[in-house]
Image 1 (spheres, rainbow, N blue to C red):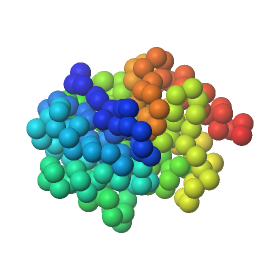
Image 2 (tube, rainbow, N blue to C red; image 1 turned 135 degrees about the vertical axis):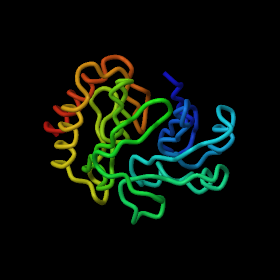
Image 3 (tube, rainbow, N blue to C red; image 1 turned 90 degrees about the vertical axis):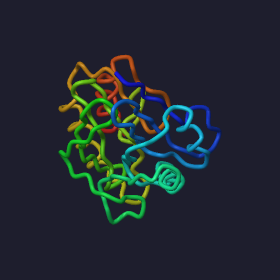
Image 4 (cartoon, rainbow, N blue to C red; image 1 turned 30 degrees about the vertical axis):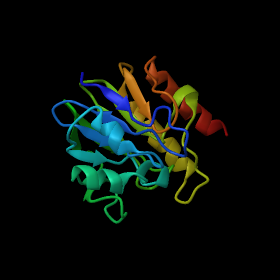
Length: 194
């Protein structure tokens, strides 16, 4: 499988994780914010083909313009009415990240335009701010947040990914590479109990 690198690793600023998926179609999943992502991209690849956004909170899209300008790429996200989104991705659409096809899963609750990206062949999920390590989940106290919608979204993702999920790349915190499906199960229980 082509490398997946969190370009925001080690950044000491308000940002989200930003994942460079290398391979046949180099794509950036979220851009992060408040750091020089362009130079970090260039240490790995010479060109990008697209930016895919899990959602449009500022910490996930703050570097969009810098990446657009440096690489001449367009962005893809759920809501084309958002300034950071050039092209729409609908629920169920397929998008190539690196060497594999991923399906977009609309997962509102943290924000109305939130999507996750699931690759069946690599058994990989880009979870954005839906769920995190150790059963944490996206906050619902911001505008467009909705706890019931979040719970439904977690349940939907869990039903899609299966027990063979090998890797979960999240919007904040470390990658989840050890039994990520159990972390989703725990997030579903924790979201219901609070």
